[in-house]
Image (cartoon, rainbow, N blue to C red; front, side, top):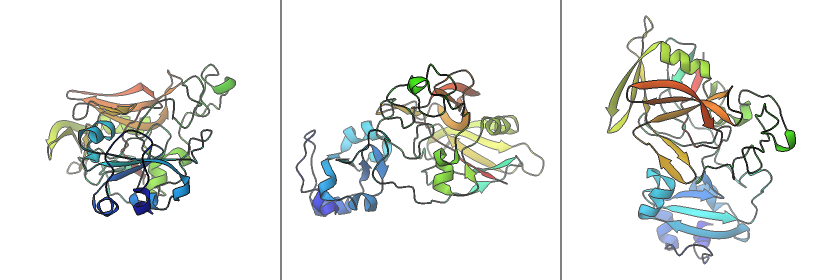
Length: 295
């Protein structure tokens, strides 16, 4: 139980530990082995499986985990971390729901990012092909490699980047690695490069501010759909434990691997006055996801 967790002495940095009563009332976010989980899931971990518990608050929490950590973070490290699979011992992948808008295109576009409650919220950040957000984003903890961009274990078409010469020539995410499909269920998925290009070519993109958040209002140009739009915030990206360019740049994963970079995938990239698809987004980066629903 969480109340038992907080009686454990920390073996890491000397951050303040709350009392058990406070921990159950404060709106903390929880990470287990660098994977974000909900509080109820964290409570299920047995005391004997815990290595350390650290609470991080105030500016330190926001610097490490982003704006959502304003109330603090409980960071749990366990003894059961599997270094080979790099999978957490638990998962927060219960189904969530999102609304979508039909812009008259080949797919319907969600009104919010994965992990967001409002259109202007950034939501969660994911490495390409991973299904859980993390505290830190690097090749060291990327699930589809063995610690290096030259040791890929999946989505590799160049043997010089594959672990021990590995290649599988996969150029698009499998359903089990598509967080939109996993989190939202059948019919949902991460958009392809072609679907982003369709959105770019058939909509008017207006840089604006919505509830204090910068981004693009994307309005359909299709006959019969010109009254419909979505808002894409500029959430920046995450690398290591840092967050960059929030409110200035937008980076959104597609499900399509890069044709030109063996360790990268295609992303929608924008800032004020600019809109494009880039192929140089390293798999391990943390980017947001605006999912689509098939028609």
